[in-house]
Image 1: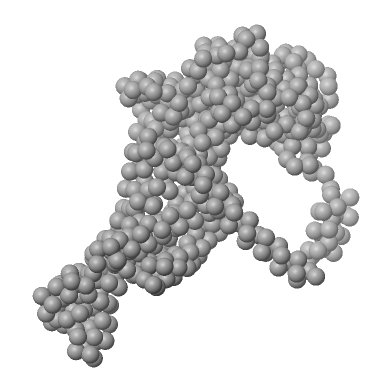
Image 2: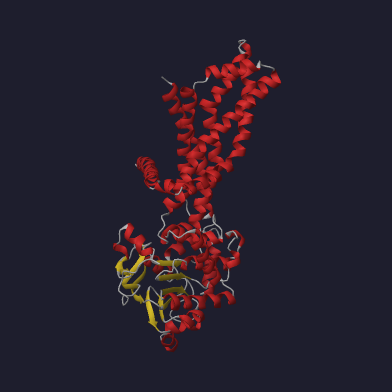
Length: 287
Length: 258
């Protein structure tokens, strides 16, 4: 594990008045949040609410439009390439689809960070990789090719790879999406266990209410381009904020419209369609 | 006016494309230390890329040799100098056909697989994952493949020429009946190690750099969608093949023109 140079009181990840987006387009604005060592923080929100954008900002893949993103007390956007690499070595990221290297087998995927960042001998690598695979229940799948394992297994292998260097901050992008109930429960417990055992800060990007409320210490709810609510799971459960209620209850009616808003670009596109008149007629009827 | 601006935009696009391509080459060369520190990464790629192309290169070399034997015999026979068949076959292969045809086959076989592999790694977020693991994908993924391709190409071109000469021998000597002693001794006397063989090797190294670089560049810049990867793969063959033929003319003019 890389030497920690930061103050233990300092949050592993902190965002202060951050606005994020691509080009001129702003996805999220005025986001402030913190994740401390040993804490599991869930960032929740609907699809397209900008959760993954938040994760990309934490890893320095995109720069904040305003505000500061700090990892281990250091401004991520102000880093040199070498500084950013040093920060990233202390983080682990679990990608939504796992992002396993398809030219390597399961064992080599998990061993990859060790081979790149440590000088461990083969015996130590074997021991450590098998221990991590054991933790996700896939010790005996070490020899398989990535193409030979199921999607759920691939996610568990990716989780083993994420934690093999025992990072101080782990970012999980939708760790529960597409998992069967058993894998889902195991993954959730594993995330909590890792945070308790390694004392790492964990940030979950998710929209799975039940599992994340069960393991999170702090929940941030993003929606409508900003931070809609934050607090401990119990606080949010008791909240009467209409957005929080709609999200937690999964209600179709509320502050968030289910239908994508109409735009002039859509109207112009529709007018150009060969069956435009008929379609427009039907739309009028629907209204 | 719009025609002029379109023309200008196209010219600017080409110039910036060449600049981008050159910067890509420089970026790969600047990170090439890993090829020395971890030679196993490169040897894996040589094995991978070389194995992929070996069969197609050898079979093509054989048929090109057969054809050279036949065509060469009928032309030389008119002048009564069919003993020079060995020399003709060897020079054609070593100087020209070996490096050029191998490079064209390489672009179609190994080049496309390199482009598709890199493009799909990008689409599957594998390159982004590597980046957030503080591993530079240019250094870890592209550099070993680049040197693997550059080293494999001259070896494949040598295999092509060797099999081609044997093909020419089978047709010329075994089937048509050209004198075996004349076939080999003319070749031995007429092919110069530096002027012919070394120049041929140099050509294949240049083609290796060009084709592998085009393949990696296209994969690296591919749109991370099935359509984007398909387009990039096609561009690898088109751009790689044209680059080989254009460079071949330039190199031939420089090497043998004077």
